[in-house]
Image (cartoon, rainbow, N blue to C red):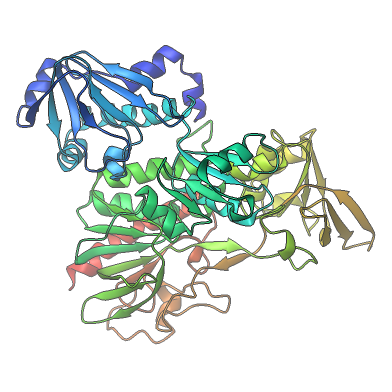
Length: 552
């Protein structure tokens, strides 16, 4: 929940979530089909896709959820102008809840495609509908709604992977820890699963998956939609800030835009617990919140987002590029944006690999923070991501230690974050320090560090180590025709021209060595590794793509 939402009263939030169309607005929708339902007749059910957007004319629609096994009423839409739906109306995912007629009911039924047109073309309705959808989802998550059930050990990297995937894709879920939750054994018996078969995911009462892949999860939950268009104006590879910005601006300016991501929206920024220096959000917002809002905005304008969809390469033909996905799908594009980002490097310390997912993490969201509530955490890195993680963890852990190799935190971190860390009573800063080795019995318990100036070695108790150092670009999927620097980051503009550019014109500022293929964000050589910069580059790419397409 954003800081702004926390300041709203319960009544304010309810009014945002459940507004009502005026008689004039209802009349403007008279083109829609009018449907009649008997008392108790279902209008749509949990798990259903392609269900309409209903506007009540008479009677009522009772919204219920049964995730705990018992039917609970969420809300009753019983006034003319009340309407159903939440964010899944725009994402195309299966419904989480059900709608049942309360008394003899008449309602307008608008298909999702029609709703998207209203949201795109009618600002006064768009604002009200989108705010309602987002607030409804937030209110639902604050109830006892269970959603997807995940049962697995906190010491299992596979359990962590599943939880991170669901969180990144904004899929509501409840995690039952095999190690500490007394209900775990009973739940496993209910699903007919042995402890050694965990982690398991119960998508619903009928579908129980044993240690599913991300692709299997996406298929079971309806997260991934089929790619149906034969040719796209712009295909964006990577749904971080740069890619999502390109999706928003590309779709809003009429480009048929597709976004592909191997995991889910957000990129590296999506792992940030709080971004405070992003313009327009004085109280800050989390990377996940920024990503979810951007996804909704992109889909509002007609962009399509497919995840998990991993690209393994592309080939260039006459005026088109063909991307090959790991599942065998091929996607044709007139232009491509490479925004596949970068990830943090593994520390060169003994024991790091052994404890990955069991104490060593490369992201810091609520998912990871839950695992270190009863101990001390160490954050390695001197950039903003490390600083944001340290401040966030200080509210969740018993204490936090920030470790940097250099002697000045402000050299790589924004001043507001550096000064906050240096003054924070629960954060200990260790400069000129490096990780030597990690120890523990099944999970991380101790970290040995060394002062790189004096050689003094110290042992520290810690249940978690968060790594935010080094950048490793996600460019292994690129063909050799796309030039990169010696670290693997994509060259663009003047640097790309020096690698064998063959056209009479110069490459545009963000254009790679392949005409019509652009790069933006962390994956681009010499880019500024900040969220705002990535958003700016992604937006600029759309203008350049228009220029390129105009010349075809």
